[in-house]
Every structure is written in structure tokens, then in C-alpha cells.
Image 1 (tube, one colour):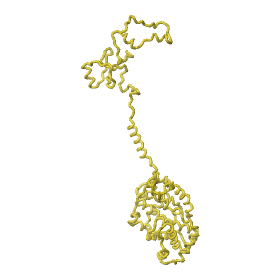
Image 2 (cartoon, one colour; image 1 turned 45 degrees about the vertical axis):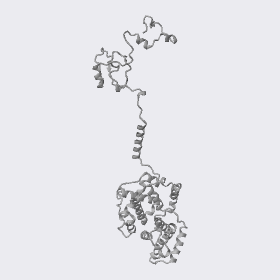
Image 3 (cartoon, one colour; image 1 turned 60 degrees about the vertical axis):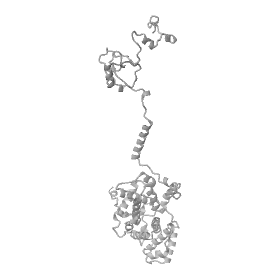
Image 4 (tube, helix red, strand yellow; image 1 turned 90 degrees about the horizontal axis):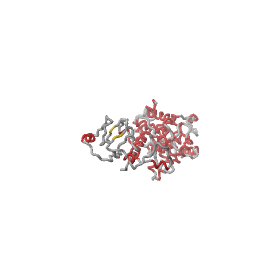
Length: 413
């Protein structure tokens, strides 16, 4: 203890001092606390406003630096974690911690930043995963349909995008005028439909590739758009178009005698060879142009199709090959509409994903006109005389695709 008699008390009545002189008159707070008569320093007591109402709070989280004995009365209350309030401010309780606040609970006191517990990294990671999952629910991601074929050299994934950009540019050259039949004086669109329906059956009996049928129809339309033809030679045009398509697509090509046989010997060998020359010269030997089949394979991959969806797409697009009014649509649009219509038929609602829209470059609204026509053909299939496509897809080899219900709800919209 410091003797109060020897301690000089500074004169607070005199003039103020600044700088180093003022520092000499300042005394430590601990010295002032020790000068209090009959009191010892107690760091847990905060007494700023003696007139304010005091609350006594037991906080077990903050350790008491001065351990003092607690009476039995208060020990029971501490064990029960109860809060003791002193109604009379004159009572002095030495065994508890006094906080001079205006009756605020401990939860109202702000926690220092050093005592705040930050969220763990694991909790943040869980929250980020939940956000990503919610985004996946509402967003339709675009699939990389070529990633799984990156190691397949036959898939040519490095050039596939450039190839289909080229097909898109070249399909304008493969399109024909939608009213070219008006230039013909002896044939009409009904005769064309009968010819193609018959060629579908011939294609099925010869077990030719799908590409051959699409190229055959493509060559017929391009030739008739540039060359007038009489009625009795229209079947000969179909036979030569299939022969050229087989030479371009097939490994084993049908011989000329087979074509004469299926035509019931209506034409001779010389007739077939002469018509082959006329057709090649008219087309200027330009046969390799994109057909709906080229785009259909790509779009089925974007739709992640199964065998059922694939067969239904081919059924719808072959029904469209017979109809003359479908010539006005480009091959890529015809293929995309077939995929969209088949999805609607199988699922019972409109289905056109972001991946399909990205790889086809067609929106759902752009496909509706062509899709509605396909639904009409689907409804009427097997009811008229031209039922070659319907009979073909009513077999087990083609998964009974002709028996699927048409997407009639598209007609209502």
C-alpha cells in the first residue's frame, strides 16, 4: 500500500498543463482504486451510473477471475441456471457479478468480433452444393453429345461441327420449288405419292439402308423439278433413282434384272440404262447433297433417344416423304420436327430441351407448323390406299411404331 500522507495530490484548481507537464500529474487508475478506503480492486465490478437500475446475471461462459465462496442460497440458484434480480439497489452482493445495464439480457449484448464463431468450410460447401442443385433443377443444361465419342475415329468429333455447318449451307441447294408439279403436264402430286409409297415397299423387301430411301426420294424430286416426264415413265424414274442411290450408299447393289423384275417387266434393260444417262446429265452428276437422314441422326443424338423414339421418328418422317406438301420444308427442319413430334407422342406433353434447340438451331415455335402436319399424317396412316409405310412399321422389326398414339394435343394448340 502507498501511504496517502506522503502522496501529493495534484491541484485540479490551477491552470491546465499541456505536453510533458500534463503527463506528470496523471495517475494510474490502479493507484486511485487502491486509495479507496476499505476497498480492494475487483475487476469484475462495473459501476458507471449508480442511479440506474441494476441486473444481476450469471454467465457461466465468462470465467470469474476471482474465485470466492458462494453461499448455499445462491449456489442452488446458480445450479438451476436462474437469473437473480436485485430489487433493492442498496443491497450489496459480493459473490456475484454485477453488470450495470438497463435490464438487458445477455442475448442483447453484442458479441465481440473476436468471439464470433465463423461458419465452417464444410457448411459453406454444403450450402454451395445446395445452390448448384437448385440451379440444376430450374436450368436445362446443354449436353456435350460428342464427348463420349472423342476416342472414336469414325465419329470425327474434331470436325463434326464444321461438317454440319456445311450441311446447313448446302441444304439450300438440295431444296426444290414447292410447286414444281405445276410445270408437269402429265403427272401430278398424287402420282408422286403412289410412286414413293411403292418404293418404300421395294426398299423394305430389298433390305436396303435407310440412307438409300431418303436419297431416292431426293433424286426424284430434283429430277422432276428440272425435267418434264410422261405418266408411263414415272415408275422408270423411281427405279433409276433407287439404282443411283444404291450405287452411292449400298455395298451390294441390286442388278438391273432385279429392277426389271419388280417392275413386272414393263421396261427393258435399254430403257433403264437410257434413263440413267438422262437423270445423271440433268442432275449434272451432283448426287451428294444432304437429306433429312443426315440431320435426323444428329438430332436424335441431341435428344438422347432410345430405340423406341428412333423408330417413331423414322416412321413420321417416312410418312412425310410420301406427302407432296412437305417439300416446302428444308431437310434440317423436317428432321427436327420429326424428333419433336415423336417426343410429344411418347411423353404426352411438349418436349424440346435446350440441347435440342442448340444443336438444331430451331425453336419450338418454328417446328409447330411442320409438326402439326406430321400429326395429321399420323392420324390418317393406314386408313387410305397408300399404306406402305404403315404396314412396314406395324411389324416387330420396327417395334410396332405405327401403333403409337399421335400427339393430337398439338393440333389444339
